[in-house]
Image (cartoon, rainbow, N blue to C red):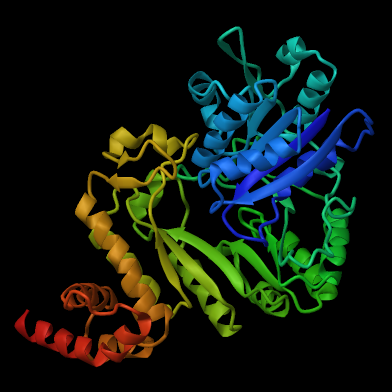
Length: 478
């Protein structure tokens, strides 16, 4: 039987779908000459019909898709076309988007035959072996899957997490990933699975029993091999890379030891940073750092079960600035109990730290999260379709959410571009203006420009003196 593993990616040419290679490596670890497994990925810009035709051309007996919120709708469109054209093809879905929605999708989408819930390697191999042997009646014994039988959806018991992650063959060390591929620019790598935290808006933990780690010995071998190929960037996919600070330092030392010019991408908790970690991050060329703070409002943070220490956070940001690292701090707009004014207060406190960049994300009410179950309690109204954006809450109106979107644009123009950054701090110091109020004024000024006026960054930058004049007049009349 020929198996095709696929996913629709956000990026073009550089987005290596590591999850598919883990499935392939685990499936083929036990040699089975009657099964072949290929990987074929697509981009979001490709039409569903074109994707379906490419897959049909490979003539797979089983096709598996890795599903995320950004590709689920198009993936389902492809599945409908595949099942219509080749009814005998077994279509399997897996990934964080479908795990908490397994029953709903199977009841609604007749084109989908099986959904693998949670960690996929062991369940998918058992599933492929049963189908390859023509024993589809044996699906009931496979833990961690949901499937349709006789028009009825069956949810098998959940599967325990793989205790020893090193039993999953490395796609890099086994040669499944061709690191010599010139199109391979950014290389992802897991050193852990799961998350040490259980924030109620997030599905990073994927309902795993806890945080598990690949051995440091394996991680060092993988880094040595990957970095020898000099990719532009290596992305360590851990939910919070420095949740174990001592382990994080060991991995950073490995990265520094074998690096030949690649950059590092990690997600950090600023409160856990110390001088040594910041220095190692600089030596490792960590120029793509994500720091999720989400809010500085204590009530909102308690509501989403997220810890935050202002003093330690500020110290961590100062260390990153000291060592010249490039990072972005991430906020979320319509969190429970967070008003638009609260969001502005968070911005003002963070901008006082002189950050490299701050970004405001729209709240996504992800399937499987505690916050989605509690949406009514907080008056959160959201889209039923991916990406599940929240439209409003008890304390943030639809207009406030829209204004938060415009605020993000103002932040990009006046702060991130650095064109007006120092002037923002001068106005704060000399005129006593809040940076968030200046950003808001820019929104009003930009919207007041004549229709047809070019909004290109270059033209807006040229007219910043006009904006400053508008700002002073507004202050005088307020």
